[in-house]
Image (cartoon, rainbow, N blue to C red; front, top):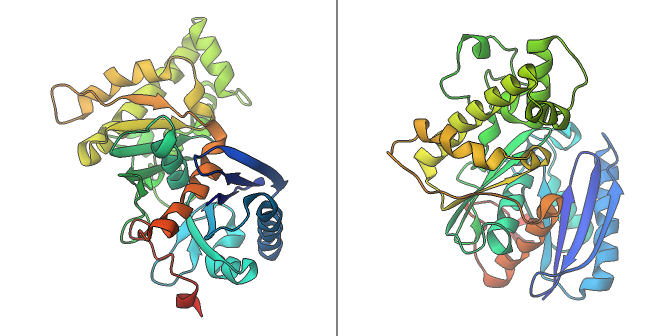
Amino acid sequence: MNRIGIDLGGTKIEAAVLGRSGGMLWSERVATPKGDYVGTLQAISGLVERSKIISGEVLGVGIATPGSENPQTHLHRNANSTCLNGMPLRQDLQRLIGMQVLTANDANCFALSEAIDGAGSGASIVFGVILGTGCGGGIVVDRIVRNGANGIAGEWGHTALPNANESERARAKCWCGRACCLEQFISGSAVEMDHALVNNTTGISLKHIATQAKAGDAASVATMNRWIDRLGRALGGVINVLDPDVIVLGGGASLVDGLVERLAPAILPHIFADSWSTPIRVAKFGDSSGVRGAAWLCDTLASGQKLGNSNNNSMEDQQ
């Protein structure tokens, strides 16, 4: 069957229909009703209804979300779109749409898309990294996204920066309430804030910083060096624990010229090995990976597989 995927973002909601071989048959984007939970449900429902015209019969709908569902309470949590937090998002959508709904964190969906037919295709263990306004991660093993027992597998952005120095530890706490979160240091917005903080400037984009660094600007070179060092520390920890077959980078910051080539020597000092060969690749599908991964979730329904220890229960379970 064809597949319907939804990518629920903070500014836009994208729907897509993937064909049997993974080709994009249709897509549409609408603005996210900011701060409006009911409006968000209705916007998603409308997109699903329009997608059915193209998709025909489907088993269900896959949805990439910010944050994740608590597997014990089934309430949504950890979303920067705060109107979703504390709400039974998946169950409400399931009742409204009238079909089975599978949800996964947007970074997990990104990783799934790239693992199935993107930059991580053919690899057994794929770690997907999003470096954008925030920082996230997703784990896919044998083409199944792994949510984990507590639904937080891959929540890389809210682990602490390894070997943080005194100035890094002195930074203000992350929005999540923790100190030294990776998101504060390695996301695209964090690099811009770091440059502004160190150089007493404002409004300079990562793209401009990278361009200036290539031109030899000392302050920009120093900012890029700090970023690469922090990324190396962070990815070294992932390799020590997970040892993935491939790491796929996504998000706007991943497109900085020369980033991938500089990461290998930055990672090596932080792994428990005298060499390593894990390929690091830029995502094949860019910002479409979220909605594509959401659509690929539907294959777990067709195959009867569990969604990586998640509690995306059946329609009957919710009635």
